[in-house]
Length: 463
Image (cartoon, rainbow, N blue to C red; front, side):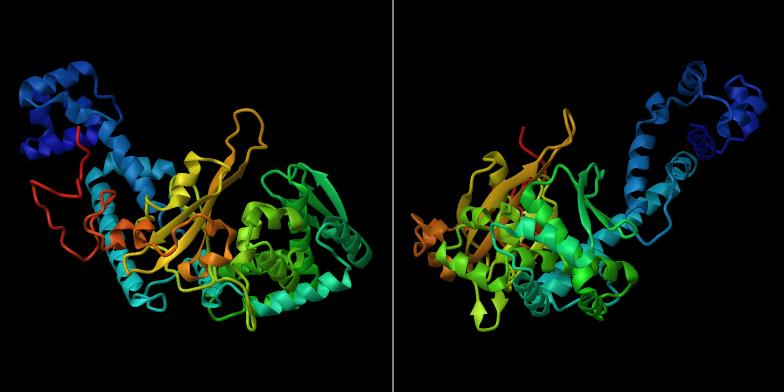
């Protein structure tokens, strides 16, 4: 509050002595208030109101709280910069609020410029990148898989070889992995409380600790992931040295992603899995029962079946939470996920949250006229106990409409009827559908045509 009082005094061209006399305070007492060494009491506030006629709300802490929140978001946006403590942020907001607001304004303009460059990238194609723009480590890993259509043949072949050598089979893979780890690597399995980690390997004791909350299929996946580091470490290391990864963090994340890919390929080996998928018409739940894994794992594996001369349907896979955050996305084809401003609320992946556990289907058409069949369902678990927040996600699996007849989910749908498709987009900021009633933002780079008598975009909701 002292900074605001000093700013008010300077705006009126008063010295400390002159203001102290007007407020009937000693000059030393006023100096202590301005230096935040003394509180700004109610009697002093009333005197300021009487002398200057200003609203006492000028000295409310509400503006500080808002500025602190904005500065915290601004200064935490760059993961590469030095962390700024809350004490320093609070000191900046209260001691130099004008500088704090300037930082927030600069950051806002930076984000707008970043959104515009991303929107341009979406229009020019995924290979285009703004000059000087650097991808985050997890984005580098995602682009590595995307560039390969989410298919790594070396890992698939290695997994098939180990599957045969270990004598694994779909309904005995869990027991088979336990036996192989112990006989081949001297590693024993222990189910216990591992905290937030699902898997922890103690190399000294040769014990692989798995979370006791994991289902049997999840345990098998974690064992297979550990086997990747034990069996094919040189291959993983070679793949993780790809020039696409610019730093050690990106390479470390890549090694985990590659190990997870191998785990899925080991539990669901390419040849048998593709044959089963074709036989079951890509029925995800039937495949889950056959291979002993969950809905999300099957969807993820279906998006990797792009081996030359033995291709499955080219799927795109996505996982989102209720807030629209995309935590996983993989594509075996050229579907462009939005990189700017969220995704489309008309997409059935969000409707899945309203009907948990139910498989929803949707024929959706993008603004360029391409049409897709989408399957969506929620997944989640709550094993943290009473009042501990659980995990809840929506899984989306999509393919071009020309492949839809091969899926069991096309039954009863009017695939050839253009009126049956829901018009969706990649996200409001890059979507050209000007007449969409769900539009939340105008399209970046195009002026918003506003008719005060009729407009599909309203910046404020009607009361």
